[in-house]
Length: 498
Image 1 (cartoon, helix red, strand yellow):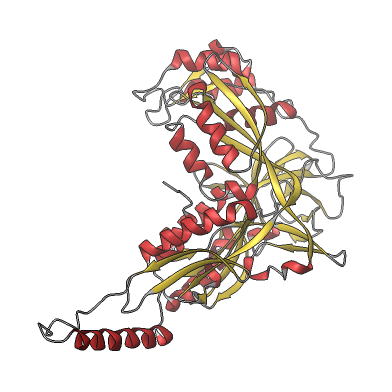
Image 2: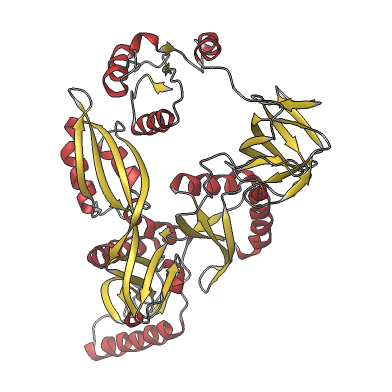
């Protein structure tokens, strides 16, 4: 499916290569042809040059207008090969999705490669050896339609009294407990979180609602992991692990829209591997767990291989953006006479803040981005803390590369200065690495004009009143508490220096 206005994007290439690795038949479809900016001839040229497919076989469609839907259905029937399999062989079925039904438990979506399944069969999941008794099998139409049996080549659902979605794993193989298949279907990989962030309610009274919301969300999202967390500044919340930035944003949106919660998210972090002086290895994803730097021998951070497709006029701007994020340019190639693909190796920690937004901004929306994890590499890691009125705020702490720490601390202090409301005393905002202060901003105090009634006369009386005011402000600073607004925590995530 290719956008008629955007053309072939990085995700298009990534999915094409994935399909080709599995020897799947490809049907090119050009969608959104109803848009005013649609350029079908340009997209056809890209299909031929970028993808190596026949552009004349591309189906023109608009899901919004309902155009080309019948042509797509006909192409699926006529072009894709029919499923193969022996209905008499031992059951071998692939789980590709699942969802939670509050009345029936987990509904497993699967495709049967070999064998037959019916209600009453005892099945086994091959990844965790869990066994269940099948209550119902059926096919998907507008609603679920129960069937007596499902055989090789069919796609359907199964209900077997499974309590939570996390008990079923996408890519897992289902077989019969009494007559198992010889081996599971290849390609199963357990989902592992790569981006971590803490979630707190804006009002501490909403914590119980957040607990209920997280439990319900977990029922429908097997990839989400979380554990209880607490912060001196923000109270109780959860430390969560996500598959990527998109997953984080989806979870945040669902919590806010479906459960009507107002949330604060801490700066996202990645999982670092620390090699200690005694040879042991420590894995951390939370700045609060960062050990004494003198005990660390080596720090390793995850790197990604990023594929960026852009019009060639933005090459310089994208190159500058990636170099600022400690990127290594591995290769670039022209896909057409004015579009090129750039390959970079980047630290994942530099991508999770605002990289995608910046890329879209500097390419005026024409840049596309896709990435995959490759390995862990040595890094010079430091913990950056922020002090408000000389008090450390643990929820603002972040792990960052030493070369970027001063710039990031300076920008964050300036952002916090704009967000923290003024008090009757000065508020010092400081960025620190260990005991060393590396940046500072100051929120000026409100000042009452105590000399307003002193007109004429001796200057010493004015000085006496000003000194008295100064001592009062100093005393107030020692006991004053600074309440951080929600916007202050969000400001730290914005690294824009403009």
